[in-house]
Length: 326
Image (cartoon, rainbow, N blue to C red):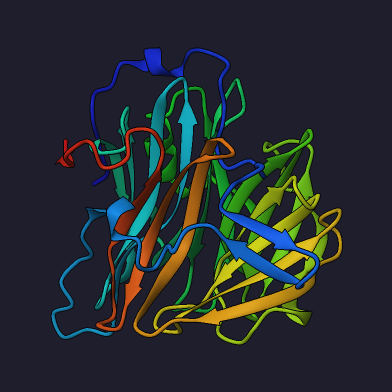
């Protein structure tokens, strides 16, 4: 059964919405003289700004276990965090939604199991509020690993998403043969990165989230390194370039970058390999270009991927994590 905490819906008022827009950032910059990416922070080794938020399930002799593949949305000073949990013997078996006012103390609003949804597995998701409705885009496998589809649901309240998610007759199908939707926003247009079943990222656009008709913008298959996984897009005002930040999947420890002038055409820049870990499925919020919060699975060589926070903000590491599960 899905579980839903009692929550005052007053958090749903207001007009502030900052999910994962394509924001100007101080995380990566493009240097045209050297055709390279300048990385301000050593995300892999910067333990001063890293905090583990959620542990991965025990391996129990299985292949791999992870928590993440979700999204990170801020509205009226409240942060919303969606993710799926994966057991090594049960693939992606549930979605969870958590909320926090400080990024360190989290309260669960709801969880929905695959048994409630009547699907075999779930993977990446994105939550968004457009000023009137909450949207939850997500990916579900209707078969045994080869029938991935992207759907969305919408509700006037964030807690109302749970009952809709538990009833697959309420789902709106967006794509077949795709998974891991990543919603973004830029200059009045919504964008979605999604992974097709051939293993490549595709960028789509739409004027509204309340639609099953998304237009293809760019297929990354021609520049994407082998064994890549989900990426995100940021903007660098110093070079007037969009920057795609991609990562390796599971135990393929690397990050890679590409640039674009207008989102419709991309150029590969570089790839950086790491020894025993990498950020896997990162998502971020940047209230200002120099205040950046990243939440990502940290994929380790032991086949676990717990969920971490990278805090490059004024409160960095000043609080103690207390997770309250309702």
